[in-house]
Image (cartoon, rainbow, N blue to C red; front, top):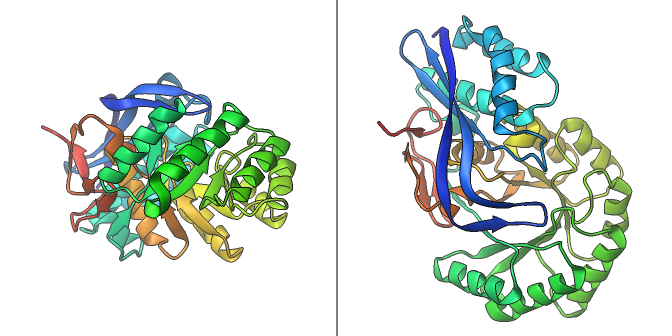
Length: 357
């Protein structure tokens, strides 16, 4: 299986409702899909979502990075898999989402060559997972309504987006807690919106009211390691690092100083599947559990993330892979079943997603 051609195209789909966080608002999915074709007719698919506020990448920058890497991959055999990964990661720095899209396509091809679903190629056995669903940041009444609608659709875990105003955030969380009672687990995500002092004030206020969320995700700026440690030492709510962790080096720095309780692994941050697997192994070494999260991605990248979660199911205990459920419709062909909170991998070789004819 020799790589013959690498192409890209935009993958578009509207969202059911706008996706709002402390960092951005998105009304429709517009991702970049990578297609790697081999001389024998085999095709691998990968995907990346531009998130300039987080990764610094746009669709145009992703295309430029892929065009830079592409000549180094064309002509390689899929059996030269490690060489291909090395060329992706050492030909250009950063550009983690573009690299992830290329990696996913390569992993798709390699597992197809072995006639295995990707999770089995990676050593996984688990096939069914439960994801949370994002409650976008809005006025309190809207967030309460969205939370109750999510419960009615079968979701048991709500990821509540906050971070624009500490006092308003307290009111939002209290109102959602009062509305859902013990019917749902809450995960809070401030998307770098607070200072360390504000984080402690908000969390201690909620804890005094009997509200201890499963985690608080990235309350301070990505580079504020001292702030994360300050928070962790003063609250009961477990602390989850997201934007602070792109690489293995980032994870070691946080875990060495015991600044967080959990790590959020995202393929778009780690540069793809290989980096995600390494990050999970590092977390295991430090005795820390992980979330497998996503950007606002389509089915190719989300499916790849689920395969990784299966491979590291002992470490990845939280799943935040709701992006396909946020779409008005799914324009791809999938053997992976996306059924609201439940995602089920199939026995089909590869990642289990392809383009509709």
